Length: 361
Image (cartoon, rainbow, N blue to C red; front, side):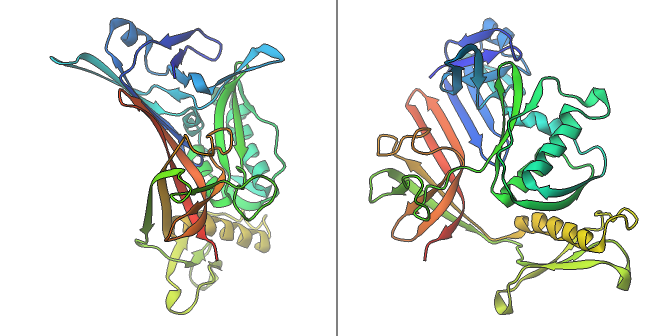
């Protein structure tokens, strides 16, 4: 694998001839990041400056019908540089930074915005009003575009004001099971959301993908439960004081299994009763759901996949897909939420992280 440095969306592409190690951390819900360690030569120091975009050779594709249309996926952006020297290795330049998705986090929701309808359209509205065509021209990110809509039908009622857009996207997409990405194609930034493909036994559209020690396609595995300061039922407090406060509840757990909490949603405004009470309560429910997802018990699987096995990454399964995991302890379906690619003098490996999982009956 080779790494290239991009100077702008249509700028010169420079190959990075030599590197000591690289980590490419690709996220489905969150913002990706990277670390690249290269010789600290004068050429590298001059080329690899803050803001320079980096892309792996495996993430570059050319449209066969239009060779001028080049697409760069999993693009990273240099943010921090650390130049060090020791007698054994000489000068070493370590580069770190976020994925291209981070540029969305350079904007906040500038005005109070009420969202009603599909989640997909709500996301596209927020991006359009704050990045593509905001009322203040200074807020425009040039050459930022939306990929074609997918037609997802999940519904949302929400109110936003001052949220960092990247943070809001992470929370919203995790709640609804959407991934999001920003990549470069034909000289433009492209924003896209996707759901991933269900490759479990619950469907019969595509061939299931099953990882298991038994099938010799999983080299290592781990399971973690996190249940600190969580609750599964909540009182959501909206506008008003005392007995006049508008409240809603969320969560269906009962008895000894019920753990309660309070969610302050007083920032959700009814706009002086312009919004109906029913719609306002739906907004409280949506706000409560997005907050309570942070308070849920977490189950997470991790593992090292045998890439010489039956399934090939980016052919049989992709980041964001839902796959089947089997062991003597569980038979679960889970989403691939992260792929960490690392390469050094010992070779290369790609480690997946699986998200919240549901055990099959």
